[in-house]
Image (cartoon, rainbow, N blue to C red; front, side, top):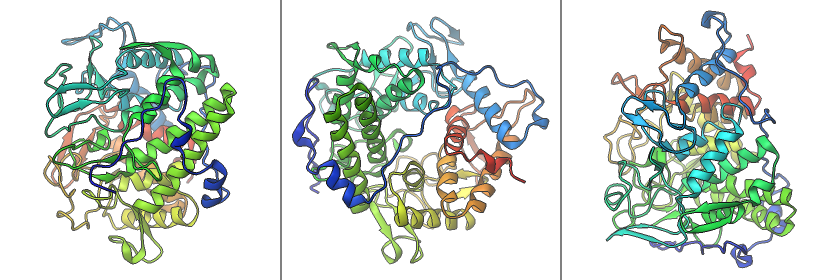
Amino acid sequence: MPEDAPRFPVLSRRVFNAGAISLTASLAARALGSHQPTIQPTTQPTGQPTGQPTTQTRANLNDADFLEDQARRVVASALIRAGETRGPYTNSTTFDLHVPGGNMGYPAFWIRDAAMMLGADLISAAEIKGWITLIARTVRDTDWNVREGVVVPAYFVPDHINFDGSACFYPGSYESGDKQGGPPWGKFPPLDDNFYFIDMVYRHWRLTRDIKHFFAPVHTATGQWPLSAVCIDAYGAVPCEAMFKLVTAGNIDTDNAKDWGFCDSVFKSGALLFPSILKWQAAAQLAVMFAALGDKELAARFSGERDLLAIGLITFLYQSGDNAIDAQPNEAWLHSAERVGNQPDLWGSALAVASGAITGRRAERVSRALVRAYREKTAVRDGLVRHILTTDTTNNSGWQKSVSPVGEYQNGGYWSTPSGWYIAAMNLTDPAAARDMARDFVRTLRSWLRDDGTTRAWEWSNPDTGRQANEFYAASVALPWITLKNANLLHLLRDT
């Protein structure tokens, strides 16, 4: 692909571009084999939380129940209700919101962090509907030229929303005006939030089974449109290559679009792994919702694009055997980016296997690579996961180019946000390794317990340097619990 990768044409709010998919769903299915990726259902059809954290003494809880208890505690700590004041911050929107963590280390509503709390029963359907309404209000139908070299494309979703309802499209600040964005945060906003918005819409539908909301009108920054149309436009606004529709980023010096929020201090270009997996998921979710709506044509078209994306991941970013960094002949990695950042991606490789974006023998090869990296401690410490291998020689175990020094934050810190994906991916080929890592993770959470029975749930830490940052981070405990629950793997924490 050229460095200035072509953008996916923005889809009409009323008509899905029939020419956007170059292979039919049946042709793509034949290329992939018989497997059809599925969306995991939630287990709480009423859309209501199942109650407050248990009051049972933490010493009496088995590891599985302890993990659930901590997920509920930390997520509950991150709630700020409409009109509520916490310290210097007042939620002046009319919606209950969950911030990334209970310590208010990130005092705003982050789209991706909120989405990572969904998929079980931690957040009510009513609150999710409020999130969707709030986010939709920020979406424009024309490009916003923030200032020279900083552009918010039409139909992009913000990175985060302040408590006054104003939108911040870029990481790095709480600026909602013309001072946001630009170096080192990018000409364009991160490329993941549009897909997390679609995930919110899907999770709301899974809880309520009310497909009418998907077709109901919502207010945007520039008019009122059916929610389904806003989702189509958000999906189509993200830049991609022409053949397989993988998400792409252009030159790191001129565009510097961030692939997703947990790598917003990292520079990447070309076809991108993580947002392409999120796009694969979003295509699958839209296909399911349009099928429920009775629109067979749109359901088939999104199913076809889902399958194209799966082929593209293998075509562009899958590296096996002798062609892969630190992989044995029966192993493989998915690389994070096609050009800058072309390195094995631990989080993305784990998610691709755990989600079903890659399947069969290729998934098994990636699973085996993850197992070996776990056993050799080149990826995982104490149940927490780096972004990249300690044996990656591209930049001394760091990303090729990053704002953070090696060993810090997204450039070598250890996180539990992806721990559930990693455990689920290893379980494909080595359930014993999956069990061991799950127990390592819970042991770490227990070591972080405060006197009130709540784990500190650090956003990231580094046992080599002693650094720990941002306690009570919801994604550190909620997302692993949700992942293991939906994968039916909580038994790993109960089996003796």
